[in-house]
Length: 261
Image (cartoon, rainbow, N blue to C red; front, top):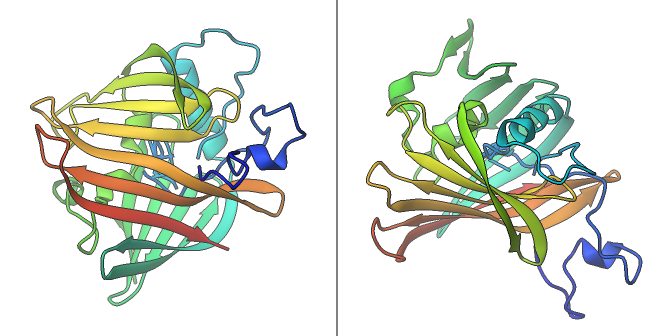
């Protein structure tokens, strides 16, 4: 979240003085990332992007309780927004339309429409064709989207369904008190061996996600930069996605996922 001239975050500036508690409305991602969808898993994506939880009053929820709440709340959203992926001189516009558990990403030049279905036990990413839909090939999930740091897997919210997860504790991210979760991939089909998620305890927003490769090296980092209020609800405004050189802190590429009205 961005800090304003008075040293307050964008969200805190909307609250009564002396009561900088988390807003009861949720952030909304595209992604990726709830996603990744943590998107998040997170999202999810978004999407790779802010998530809502119903966990107030619980001192120590389990990781699976948190993920179940994320999946349930994310599948109830109704949105129609414009966005873009931006990396250096590359700008990739897209349209994000969600009707409950169905999320569509529409890209142009060339045209490509992806449909994400959030189920109770898994998510499914399909390619929309003139004849209907066909399941997106698992071998292509690790491919980058049009030269950016974002992969198709980052849009698919698969991590929200990983069975091995635990709460590592609490940690502050940009002044926000978050639950820190660790999720382990069930197989090598994922580009990530495990993920770390930071989820705002008050609002349920996915604040940060870190993805580690199969050599246990930090490979990618997602972090919310700012949020915006649209029709009384909080949505993601900008998320930064950094791809790192394995074994170092050197950023190889930096992509911004930006949501517009």
